[in-house]
Length: 119
Image 1 (tube, rainbow, N blue to C red):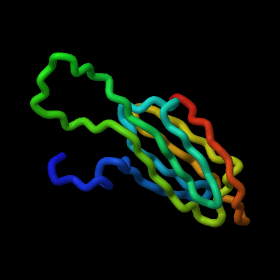
Image 2: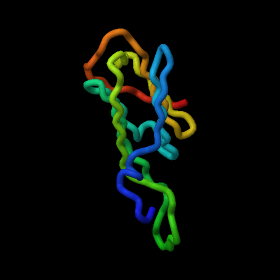
Image 3: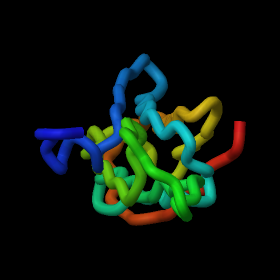
Image 4: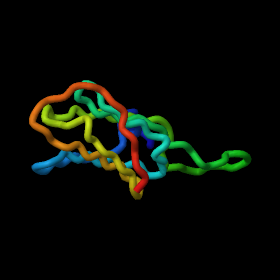
């Protein structure tokens, strides 16, 4: 996009919510396959990194405009102290990555990687 800042196109749109038992983070990743996303927790910070790869071929084509965005992206979210990092689950369905972080009574800081299930 003309005039867009770098932060506008490398940080996918997201939302966070919670209930009595868990925190939920949903991130829009249309066109991104789960195998192109890395999700991890370290020292209370949930980080997702990945890449949206282009599928178009540019040989001999003249492009007039493209509003689609490709390339690497990254987002980090500091989790509340009562998050249970050992029980985090992630699911990707219809271009939305949903991460569910259960609540627990005490803080936890050890790091781990999280697998993403295909919805």
